[in-house]
Image (cartoon, rainbow, N blue to C red; front, side, top):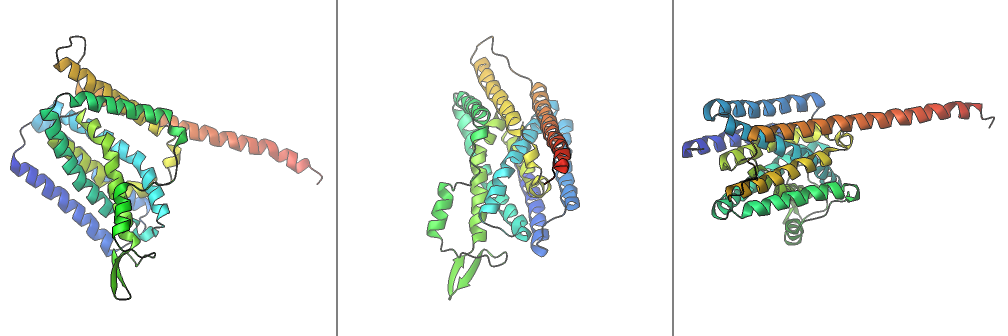
Amino acid sequence: MNVPAWLWVVTVLGLTAVIFFDFYLISRNPHAPSLKECTAWIAVYVGLAVVFGMLLLFTEGPQYGGEFFAGWITEYSLSVDNLFVFLIIMSSFAVPREYRQKVLSIGIVIALVMRGVFIMVGYEAITRFDWLFYVFGAFLVYTAWKLMAHKDDEDEEFKENAVLRLAKKVLPATERYDGARMTTRVNGRRMVTPMLIVMIAIGTTDLLFALDSIPAIFGLTKEPYLVFTANAFALMGLRQLFFLIGGLLDRLVYLSYGLAVVLGFIGLKLVSEALHHDGVAWAPEIPILVSLGVIVGTLAITTILSLWKVRRDRDKELEEVTAEQPVRDADPA
């Protein structure tokens, strides 16, 4: 895929303009968004991603268009799973609801910049060292196994990473928030507020998530332009998605298992295609449309089964309460 420099510039400037406009709206009126507002903005961002993907289909063909959609859907799905950790971070730092949009927006910008660097480094690495595809594939399969095997043992407490611990040690911070300000003065001394610390937590935690999401998308496309745009579109609607499904995450009980299947499939796809490239005749190259079908199908089945289980458990609890009610009514005491 031949991407001229001007298209890179236009794409980055366009994404930057959207992000700045989004941030301007938040800064002008800090608030906890309503369900209607979140739904409208997510529809806008999803619509932009779909339009972008359709343009790729018409201008570059179904191969690159399919790679973008497969990468975007995968990254978006991984972002949904990561929202649970963001909820824990927000609770751990006791961020006021009206300022959570700002925290997420700046944290996402930090994550997008760092992911851009990560993508460039990863692309340079895989173009120079073909054996890295085996490493990426094995890592994704291992990550999938961890999601499957240790889902029930996850610790719901937020664990600080090295960057966050260093920031808290180096930066003089106050204990209280000062509105949405990132710095404030205490007894004439300039200090950072917890607002800045939590933004660092969101941004660096998202970078840790990129340790599996970046190799995953490189398993679907080798084009750095598609890798970057798929990540950018997946992150752009993350703030509104946080508020829209924050209370619904517990209902997606099988999401991690679905993501494990997706990551495991992409990992095996990477290894198979690397073997094919190295002359192993029995190792197939998996078409991108097949990959897209597996990803969409797995996530759809996962969502349906999750909602079915939650509804079944709720109906079962209701039946048990109803069955116990006559016994309590008949009790003379």
